[in-house]
Amino acid sequence: MQHLGVLLVLAALTASPLAAAWRPWPPRANGTTAGLGASKKFEGSSEFVKLEYHMGPVLASAITVHPIWYGAWPAAQKRTIRAFLRSLAPPPDSSARIPPPSVSAWWRTVRLYTDQTSANVSAAVTLGAEKCDARMSRGARLSRMDIQSVVRDAVTARTRPLPVDSSGGVYLVLTSPDVSVEDFCGQVCGFHYFTFPSVVGYTLPYAWVGNSARRCPEVCAYPFAIPSYVPGRKAEAPPNGDVGVDGMVSVIAHELAELASNPLANAWYAGSDPSFPTEIADLCEGIYGTGGGGAYTGQLLTDARSGAAYNVNGVGGRRFLVQWVWNPVLSYCSGPNALDQ
Ligand SMILES: *[C@@H]1O[C@H](CO)[C@@H](O)[C@H](O)[C@H]1NC(C)=O
Ligand SMILES: *[C@@H]1O[C@H](CO)[C@@H](O)[C@H](O)[C@H]1NC(C)=O
Image (cartoon, rainbow, N blue to C red; front, side, top):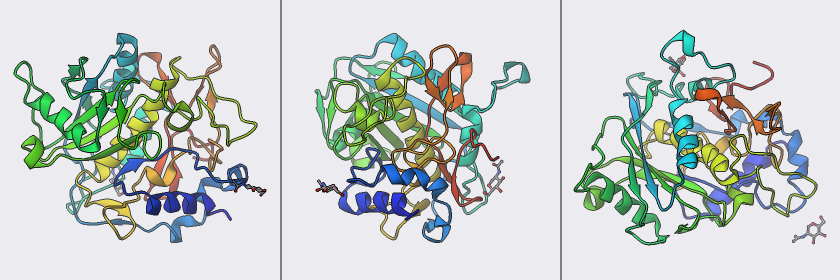
């Protein structure tokens, strides 16, 4: 029984024709979600979860994240997401210390992944140049392949194109609530992959994450909104006061963790089929603290002033709620707010 959470994730994967994606959580499982709260960290599942290294690169060089804001993005929403991205690297000097548990301590689990040369995923994650496409030049309905065209538009723009950085560049397409993306809400909240030279001119790791506020916050911004099939649970207050954006932060974290450990879909994943990989964040979807599993988030922290739920601290006194990722040393999901570490 304690493996049921993982089994549900795997069942969702085999049913889905999509690679490398964050899937809506919690899974729609009749009558079983409540009981999963007991499956602490999927203990004992290490024999079941065969996460393997497939010889490809990880993002071992300094990582630069380039946000591409597609659609209407108010400044306050951008500030929240930028603050999260700036929190991933350890602060440059000790005077800027961020109280534990921190976002950079969360990234430490991702840094446990190495490539053939024993190089770890980089600790240096910085916010790079950004691009806006407020007028939605590809329209308000995007296919999965259109996301690559949005990246192409950004790196080939006539004015201030984003730099093409194939060593550590990551292109993060963020769509506003009025943009619909193929399979958004029904099957995915975000995904990552790499661009094709035939479309973009280069092979660049990229991710897409959508703001679900108007479409499906109960699946893509859980637990800040709760689906009706999880009875008796109250929505948590979002730490930055924005259900859609606070929900996106965890999906962004998920996709960046997987991009870093599996940028070309040939490094770290479980499962025998690279088109249906189970990656390091897929294994821990919906787990934000000790005891998490099923519809239960695990132990969270509470912001004393706002009552908001969070589990990590970032720059500028910001707080965020991000899901845990699979720890290859411990062979279970872990995060810096674990009660037993
Ligand atoms: C859900 O489970 C209950 C009892 O376990 C059952 O009566 C009901 O028909 C189920 N609903 C669906 C949609 O499977
Ligand atoms: C690099 O990865 C190895 C293997 O997981 C781990 O033992 C080591 O602590 C990691 N180094 C850093 C700096 O994270």
